[in-house]
Amino acid sequence: MPERRPSSNSARKSVWHRYLPPSEPPPAPPADPADSGPEDSGLADTASIVQAALYRDGVRVSSPASLAETFRELREQPSNMAWIGLARPTEAELHSLASEFDLHPLSVEDALEAHQRPKLERYGDTLFVVLRAARYLDALEEVDFGELHVFVGPDFVITVRHGAAPDLSAVRRRMEETPDLLKLGPEAVLYAILDAVVDGYLPVVVGVQNDVDEIETEVFRGDPEVSRRIYELSREMVEFQRATRPLVGMLHALMAGFAKYGTDEELQRYLRDVADHVTHTSERVDSFRQALQDILTVNATLVTQQQNAEMRTLAEAGFQQNEEIKKISSWAAILFAPTLVGTIYGMNFAHMPELHWVLGYPFAVLLMAVVCTSLYVIFKKRDWL
Image (tube, rainbow, N blue to C red; front, side, top):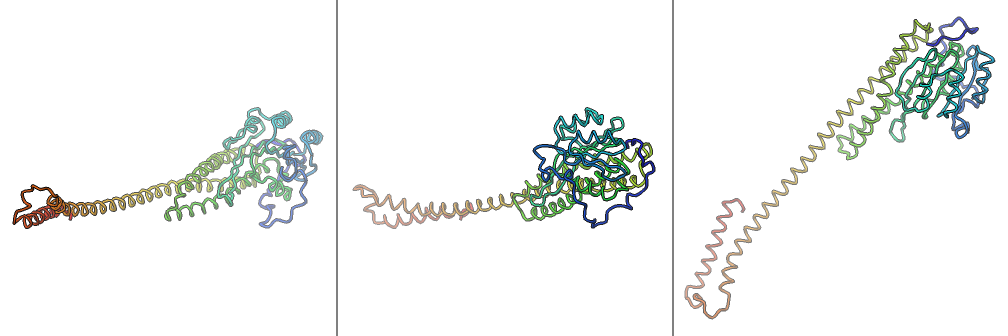
């Protein structure tokens, strides 16, 4: 981790778990206007700075209203730590921060463009961390992803947020309620942010698990819209995997620098716990992807079986229809024979050889019977009747 500038707090105490807020934390102190989100503060259209404060020994000593005022106060009190939060900052604001805190141009460029994969980069004594936060939207039954860029220096933490998640104001309140933890420095703030991002994955995992269970039910119920839902959820799991899988390597990289940068022992335990949670979440996401692939295969099999059954039903109906047509055609041919004979002998020509023949009528009837019987036998042998 970055080495801090000399300050009055040279001896660090292991206080992380000792001072963690209880499950039902006490009411937070009145929020400073600078801690409001852009929607609450009314500054969404005028400024991107939503959180700015200076801390000494874990206690907030100032809440500057602008970046320029923050820079001025930090120069006047170099032992303070600045924690600046930005939401979708302008290029001018980021370049101002880069000039003041000596941020690397590549990290500034990444923070401006966003759409980065989670990563950890070290530029001199400054860490640049990219995180992908996630939240589950119950009403829409989908996962919303946000992006967070964190600059961690010897005496400053700068967060650049793209998206609604995570709620950094809650992280700040939690840290301010535990000043013995906050005075451990910027690395404690970084780990608290990592914890907030990773904790935000749990509701997403629960929501996705419910979606997978519902999809399984819909598949066997034959819902025609289930294929679209499987595809959309699979795409979200690809994004979720891209957010969690690199984070495992990032946390291990941080843990590898414990000895080199003299990280507090309690923070080491905390980071290992966060790494365990990330690993567990990454494994769950992998299992979701595999489950969705299996469900998609089962759904395709069921759809194919249903189509085959429908085709078989249509074929059987067509065969039955053909049999009926054969019967109708056979009887029509049989009935056509006497009609033909009767029609011929019903013509009123003056000169017909059989008209005055004594056996003419019996002969005509016999001819009709012979033709009809012959046709019946022929159709019967061909299974038309």
